[in-house]
Image (cartoon, rainbow, N blue to C red; front, top):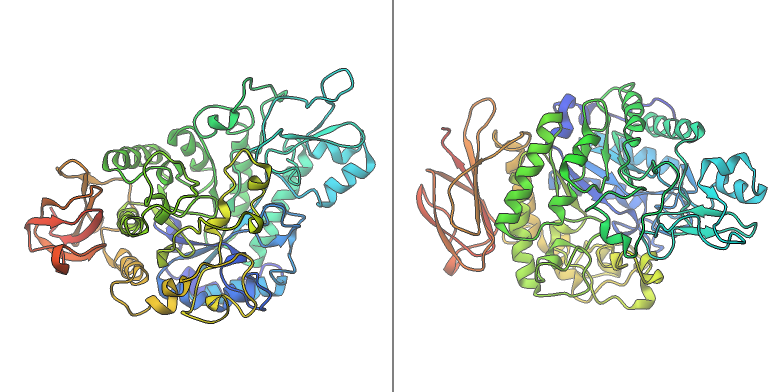
Length: 565
């Protein structure tokens, strides 16, 4: 299966040159999306069967979290073989069929690539352990002698993201580096074999027909020379806020320049997206310079609470950072590593992105719907996480004994509550695992999950699913929405965001108003036509008028089509 184009015609028909600049990309976490063989775990055949649902939803591309051969120490982000499918998910033939079907439906496929670390079951690492100190394979990872009189102390003071030391000692006395779990040893990207191997891996999947890659821990591949100590405890509080010697080193950019050259060998404008946690959006912009990657996740936006002033600040900073490098801004509210935004916004501000409190679910859903319309109105590309279109909350009351997040077991580092956003999503009102599959689900689903299912919400004009479908249809059709690099802010009361976007090639303008306060607010909007509202006004009447003053309900967002200036 080399160099096949996997029925690319439909996917390539729509503005192929710059498709990523305004794409809405839907993340699928394979274990939890759809189970095709009834073993309780999601898989590629299950995803393939649900592709028509995603096409009908109105997304442009599907990002698949890892499905590679893996011992599953960290949900597949510990890869043992980058060219094989884990049997729990299917086969390479299943992957080929999924890619073909997606392209026939006009969907592109983005796959995860995990270049910072492998599984400890990867053949390179197994040989490195087996052959002992001095093995050439050890140079492809970070093996070091320990400190102390007998080498009994770690080589430096780095802490694992999942808690505890970032080093594990081998029986032969040497230590190896793992910024995440001990089962995830870090590659040493100074070794040319590592770079050669990953260029080969990219070509393998590009030949399979994938349209791009989401680069896991894109900021972590290069470590500071000499692996210097950081000093002090509680290092993890520095992540995303300050410089650390194992993240966001300038040397990563030459790697991505070489990857860009590989991507440009292929037709159809294949792309790469950086998962890059950096202290500032300006540092993030370095990953998307014209000769590097195409997009980078906007974690600053994801971590911003439902507050008008904070949101405007992040929006302005994001657009300003991307404009000089000519890259699209990206916007995201949820993913597989954070508490779903319907639950984050149900709780008070300042609690971070991993919560164990359900908060006020009615308030959380109201804010989540409003936040989604705000996000989809912004210029650039947007990411959705599976189930958010159903308004799913995080499952915050999972019993400790069923949790599988490795950070939870280590008791430090990340809070370890990521399982709550990974509970298999509901498709039907009733039935085994609410339509997820015929054999239960690998994490327990809560009672009442069926009331939030695709079946329950389809055709209900007030449902969150139909709101997403309508919003994505408007976003695709309105000439002022999608790609762009700026917004025109309009005067608005405190707690309200009001902005206008003009089309590049003529046509109607667009106005978005988001009220982040807990009370209705009267605002003045330009003459135009109501397009969509995340909530109804007092008494249930539709929101919006033909110009003049409009009452904007609490915690809501409204879209209008307006006359061009």
